[in-house]
Image 1 (spheres, rainbow, N blue to C red):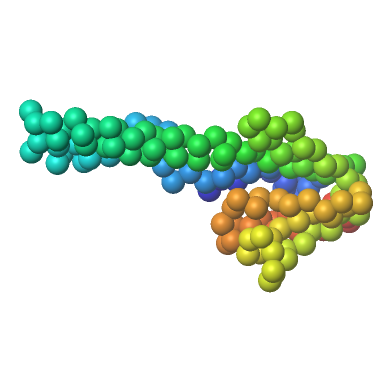
Image 2: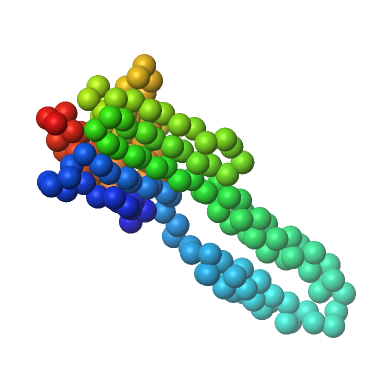
Length: 167
C-alpha cells in the first residue's frame, strides 16, 4: 500500500503524526527492463522469417519505433507519477506538502482544531474525493490512491483529528 506512517499516532501520544502518500506502481522499475526486453523479443520473433531479405529492412524501422514508443510511454508514466504527499500533524498545526517532479513544492498549513476533513461523493474528479479544509483553502489529499484506501485513510485521519480537538 502506498501509505506510510513514519510517526504513527497512538493513544499515549495522539498529538504528533507524519504520513507519506505516493502513487501505486504496478510495474516496479526492476521489471521495466524485463518488460522492454520481452516486448522487443516478441516483436522481433516474426522477423526471423524475413532474415536476409529486403523486407526485414522495410519492417525494422516500424518495429523499432513500436519498442521506442513503449519505452517512452512507460518512462513518461514513471515521471508523471513521481508525487509525494507528506502530511505532518501536531497539536499546533497540520501541514500538507506535495512534491512533484519539475514543480515547486506546494504547501498548505492550518490549525488542526479548525481543519475539516471531507470525503466527497458524487461529481468529483475521483470517487470518494478526500479533502482537507482550513485556513481559507480546501486541498485534496491522496487523489492518486484507490477509492478503498482513500476511505480507510479518511477514517483514520478523522479519528486523529477528533483526538487532537479534545486535547
